[in-house]
Image: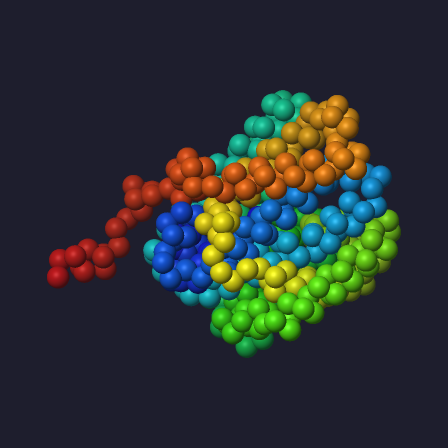
Length: 372
């Protein structure tokens, strides 16, 4: 769904350089010479999985295999994004330049697309009286507001001795607390928080570990085993557990199921994220440059997916058949790829990475530096 943590790196998963905003500007930072292609490759492949999984949702009814694939991808695709975002947020200290990029790279896109998706729902979804609320994220915009919140809290997590256990404890407590899911999607913010905190704790050598040949080989049986397991349990597991947007009580589950699922899904997500990253190419490929545009692919592909919900495209074109599901998968992958290309990034730059010099005061330190 997102990018680099501190600077101008408009990608849901950002570069390993100085300040960028985990969700910020795709173009410029992405083209830097010293940039590690591994992370851009990971971002692109992850956004393709995100788009395909979203596209499966309207057509998976009646298909156990599609439901299992959906569960499999949902187990790790957002955790992978969030872990990398946390990793690139390690140098965030709240400096004025970092806060400016936080506003231009996360807050502005959130406001623009929150309104855009709300208007789209009112026009295409047949709900003309639907109110527009900036505190109730619609569809995939939740990730932006979550990223903003996590990024701001970075200095706090870096001062704690045991940040990950605390983050997991908060996630478990959130799963026991009904009624906090609507405002700013706080339920998701808390339940996905451990992945961001884990990213803050990672170092380059940790990513080197998953790129070893032995790990790549082990990733194959792990992924196949996970697929087989999800196929087995697919009919019996509620998908809401994977969305992390509701409490155990709201899912009519016993209270203890919330913490149990929190820890179980965290463990499963880590294993599958490691397996995914193990197979991400380390060299430059034809899609490496597209990793810098994942913010655009993330924010735009939802309009296509929602079209299947707002208009009767599924029954009209028989998209809920085996052949239809293959077509939907291919179209989703191709569409999100096109949305990550440089022309689209340039066209959306005014809302995904606006300059906004007019909105901020000049830093006195910068002025002093120029006068020397």
